[in-house]
Length: 337
Image 1: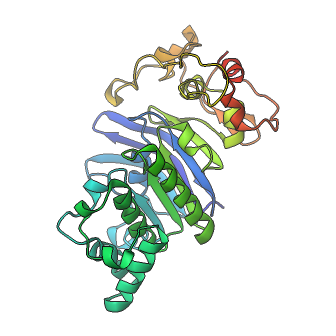
Image 2 (image 1 turned 120 degrees about the vertical axis):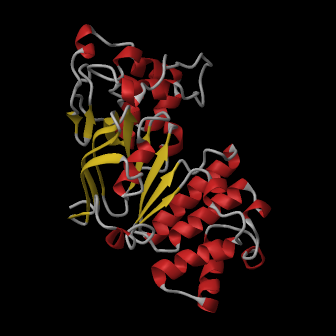
């Protein structure tokens, strides 16, 4: 049994369907990437799972935590889960941290809530957590305000707050979006190290396949409120089967070989209230046929642990081809054919 299993999760805001039947499982200790453009429903999936959506949202399905359904559970039951068993890091630390409270106090609140630590014990644990996430001079930074730290350091504060409850699953919602490339790499390395050292599972939400490539062992690609492709990382990069996945990979610049123009996906993600009939990606798809405008395909198995929701996806025999072959321009062209 998976540690967390999301089954047929749907979310609607009024008559606008934000999620349209999400099925996703996360095993203990594994790292799963959730990728797709903005508006695909990546964040909404986990906000719904943790009961953090506004009351006017209509949420259906089930979210099993160790086999027990927590979707729609009362606040008293969810409080020890949120931040305790499952913690979430949001993409904008400037909007998540309270600007008028010192960072030591904010991390300490999480320790008091989830582990009952107060006073000097809490302060010592806060400093240990700040050291663990790589904040320099942690003892003196304990009394700093968020505006006195850089964007990367504030993101490390958010990670420390998430770790305060010793979670079994950490959901990182685009934790590197507002950071420069060097700091992005440091944050991703930190998440990988923390997962290895603590044994917690990790869900990394991103719009960039390159970000999750080396961090996650399995990737789920979302589009318009559905998972359209899911596979182990190596298989997804070696055999991208859904045209949307191929488009995302085509937008990645090659690391070697001849330079060439990147492949852009025309159009944009449809509005939830204006979802097209049939396959939601059909209006933007280079391989769409008349049937695609009529049929909304279910996810079909293509190989071991690899599935795609596309009428044109074909089964294949998995190979040991490493994912970094996508850096080769000739392989990229073959993948897009």
